Length: 350
Image 1 (tube, rainbow, N blue to C red):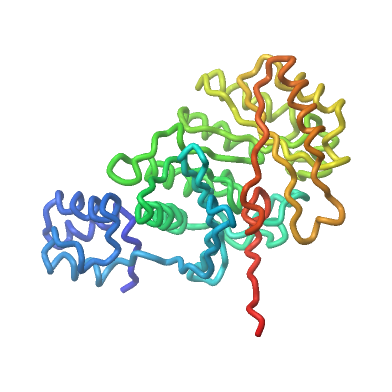
Image 2: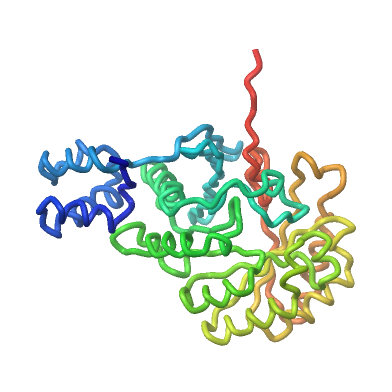
């Protein structure tokens, strides 16, 4: 008989019911796993031996195996390389901010089909959509690691490998688990989904998660430049995107985060700052300027924008009352910065 994930609440409850166990037993299991971080069935002392054996015979804790783990030189960031049961590699990144806020960046696909030219992950193409338990195991591993360090996971961003809207139903299930008070107990606003803007799914997201934060990979204020660096713009041009986002803000009254990677001589001409404020004028918007992080394969074609130009962009937006920030890069020494996730493994040499 094939085992199933201990994180599959429905199947665990069905297993207990089929073996004449009372409903409250699941609450005991849930508390042991998500509150006490017990990962050995034999250590679940609140359960009878019969139930512990039943779980051992039918469930597994981990399908992912940690293949590599690195922490940045400033100790703020940890990148974990996981290997799936089918031998794909995915990555998650823990970011410890100086404000004591801890954020986990997780993957929803192995590889990515979006082919954004500035991103390392697309070189892998799409290997597979992750299952719900493969996403949950990333969250659980990070939450347990932080608990062992006397820290607490505060935020999750679906901003790792893959496009969340192309694995939407699974991502939806995992958001509900992350928000569940008896599990990870994260507030809706502390979960952010970052998307290249698959317009039909943004509309569904608006309906399903009106309180969950939305981040849009914008990266240019016009279709001409976006098509050069983001092929998705051929299918969903700016006018379609902005219309769907207007619907989102009208229904949720939530500010949208617009990610704008700064690439020298590509999307950092000062005139584009004026186009950007016109695009976002009067909208609930927060622009996050992200210095380009060179990765193997593009360093000779793309270069980061000088800091003073990024600051000029920010000044122009401030003049027109568009809120913006410049993201601090603190984890590129372990290739864990934005758009550097590409399963790169170091080979040990004698």
